[in-house]
Amino acid sequence: MWKDIKFVTPDIVFGMDAVNAVGDRIKALKGKRALVVTGPSVKASGALDKVLQSARDAGVDLDVNVQQRSTPEPTTELAEEVAKYIVDGKFDVVVGLGGGSILDVAKMSSALTTNPGKTRDYFGPGKVKNKGLPTIMIPTTAGTGSEVTKHAIFLDQENNVKKAVASSALLPDVAIVDPMLTVSSPRHVTSASGFDAWLHAAEPFVSKNTNPITDALALQSVSIISKHLGVAWSDPNDLDARYHVSLGSLMSGMVLNNAGTSLVHALAYPIGGEYHATHGISLSVLLIACFKAIAASKGERLVQIAKAMGENVEGLSTREGVEVALDAMAAFMKSVELPISLEEIGITDRSGVERWAVEGWNERRLLGRCARDLTVEDIAAIYRDAFEARNFCW
Ligand SMILES: [Fe+2]
Image (cartoon, rainbow, N blue to C red; front, top):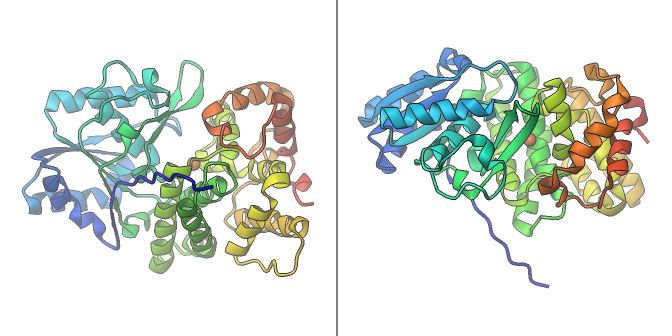
């Protein structure tokens, strides 16, 4: 059977010091007055100065909006405030400069300038009808993929859960990925966001919505990130490692946008919302339990991931290969000090399991891509399996 394939990506500029292209890129989008949405740490790292210099060189007028926030995910109100700032200031291009949350705020605020209502009105797939102002996304961490995706994730404070806006209208016009900007990432950000990037490749690969293009990108991304993340984490100034982790992250962002995440991300939402665990951590504590749960149907693909991670799976049965894959993943996470069980991040109270299972099951957009049709009770069993790391190794 011949499968139809649709593959979408923004215009991409990747390379060391690629950030210096931002001024010309704003001009190419016919921008005369751009707003940079950024965060306090980015301002301190010097990345903002590079953007300002590039804009000056290109003769573009630039204003800066520095976002402050107290929760790991941005609240919906932030995008609404920035949208008002954009409209009042008559800006014509929006530049996001920061980690994934900053980029999500920038993308959503641009969309809210041409779509009525509030962020909350657009949760779910395909709700944003009109393209916003042109956007340029410049990540300062390697991991979320937000610079090449149509997604924006927020904390819905009404229900204390994370929710996603997933609309093609949010796809940035340009992604500028400069590995030099990630050099100042703190160690725990490098590991958590790098693992998120790894999973944006690995998780779609073992889900239903793949195609040969996303598969090729996914395996290459898993290979690159598995090889280089430990070095970037150990030595933040190793530019070769930073280059490759950024490249792997960009590639996995393209997989994320075109094939989508599934079970691990769906089950991480209740944990992230309730315990305010950062995104990467809420994923790492669930990974092994989730992948065990789909091994019956995706065993051979898990073995391919093990191979991409550099494991020798020659001559092994699928069952043996899956064991190697899960052990390799656990070792990979542990090597960069990521927790691999709920107990490791202090979640010992099991009374929430049934509630999380219902919330996880309701993530139909993500679970629709899952290789296994899961009941609420199946999902509760996965959460229970994720409490203790010692249950993980077969
Ligand atoms: Fe993610």
